[in-house]
Length: 258
Image (cartoon, rainbow, N blue to C red):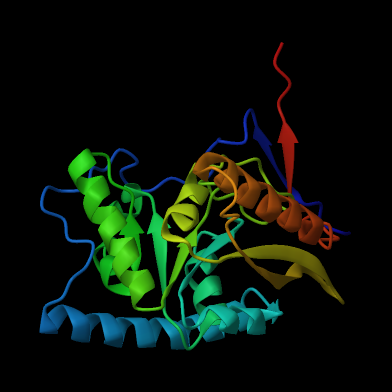
């Protein structure tokens, strides 16, 4: 008998289905978004290299991943760029942009709660995690870290949907606030869209990832309008790509309010 997809119910698109050990974890005072000591740089290089090898095996054997159009990222190798992606894998989303961008390194904007994950949370800063701060002082350091990584011609990855919905095949609404970064820093933007497509003789779908761009800020527009224009372009592009999904491994149903 064919197994039916798991069903998950939600009230809003901001519902959490996966929570870290401490969802209210606060970034400690004096946290360093950029670690420049020799030991930190060596640890970062070794861990990132090991993660790249592991992710290649995991994404291809466990997620059955295939990336389409990754070559367009080469156009930003002399400038750095922002990558916006849909959030559908608790572990895979750590690796997918990194594999698409190889050999260029990526740095991923994450929730501070990720730092509370046992063992892995301690390693994330060395793997390129940029936790979102909750203070003005922290925000200045966070922005400075992004600017430094972009000056090094690296990629900054943002998941604007914020919450992980495993195997979700649509694109959830997201605000345009995160698109102010590429406008302010005058950097190109890419959309990375994960889709799920049928496999022969197996219920678990294959993952096909599409990379689109680059999209550039419109300098003729005021900053807020330019951010909204970038948001609309990325959102529309991701919606169009998401329609290539043709199966539901997990079904999401909205709970109707009485």
